[in-house]
Length: 163
Image 1 (cartoon, rainbow, N blue to C red):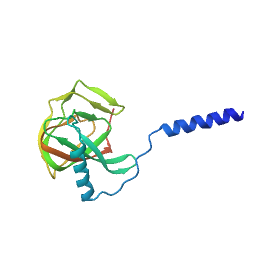
Image 2: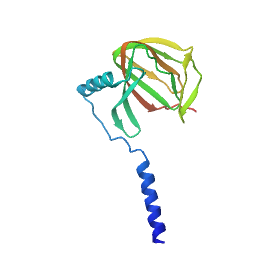
Image 3: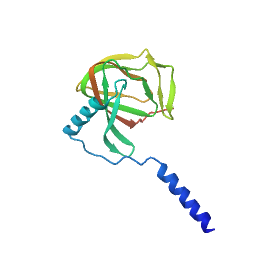
Image 4: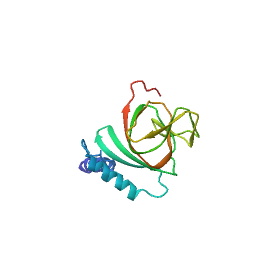
């Protein structure tokens, strides 16, 4: 009996230790912190890497990310089915297309889809200082980056999300 109890506790410890730890809470990032993150992205992004992502602020399910993109490497479009995405352009410019239909759609997790490109949609040039709200269930893609495009993206639960 003692061996069975010990085995159960040992197995539970292995299962619990194998789960990814929650990221530490981070509620403040200074302008200098963001500048350092941008320098890190510039230096550590691999030549064929379309997007270098780092957390700026983290609190449980909420995370504001710094996303760093460069000219010549477009990211695949996405559709977040249950989250709105607030975007702030920190630096640079590029094209954001919203709406349309994902080509070669595939599921990447239970609430997000991706594709090889967008068919249709509305495109606009976005640049430093712009704010954009991308509502849940809206396919979107960042393309045609002019130099670099650095954004802050914050995914928030959508009030009207449907699956």
